[in-house]
Length: 315
Image (tube, rainbow, N blue to C red; front, side, top):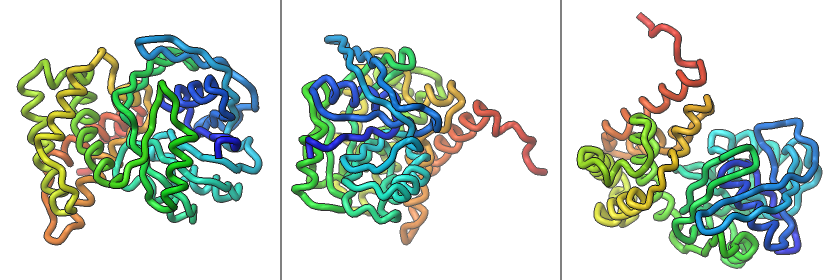
């Protein structure tokens, strides 16, 4: 598999650093622009600063619409709201190879399963990225990122891990990926709602006792769902991870706040709002008033920033 290209779909604050590290390691990689339909095939210099060193690499880039036959590992690093369109386009191009989804959220793999891709893997990314300019990024790895099987085989999973891992951006195989997916979703339901609403960086939870208390309330609501799903998550481990991430904050703005300020859609519908939807679908339903309200407030703020939420309310 390492001889076949890695196509990184979604060239942003996670996708471009991944592509740069793979290119620097001498692996064939193409950064695919999913939001820009008219990017001609060419090469750009991508620079990544991880705090310890700054690296630059020449990365081939092209728009998704400009790609012909695709055969290789397809890494989806775009925002989750684009998944249905990406899955349709890849299926229309008869793309061959595994799909590895590098996204936050619950259920984001569904469009690829519905499109009939036989090998779909989920990755929980433990890293932060922020664009300094179009091709320059700050990137902070937090820990090795787990990848697990949604559909496919263990050998296929191991091949994907080997194809994507570098010293700067490591991955590992994970047997229980849904537990990891939900754990990260709970963590993101805190960071990606509270931080953008307060317009602060993710260090707020160690700076403010009140913010840490709100985080605990959100986590406890979410755990009522994961307990029903039998995922075995504990309040102590989730809160410890939230505080560890917050303690290591370097002042970077959370991606949701970056998206809101840029007038772009956010991931909140696959985080707080999807968690609330799953909770409501259980029998009996599990009420998540804080989780859902915070999600709805972020969605409204996002729509207003994009100019789509300013119409008078009915009545």
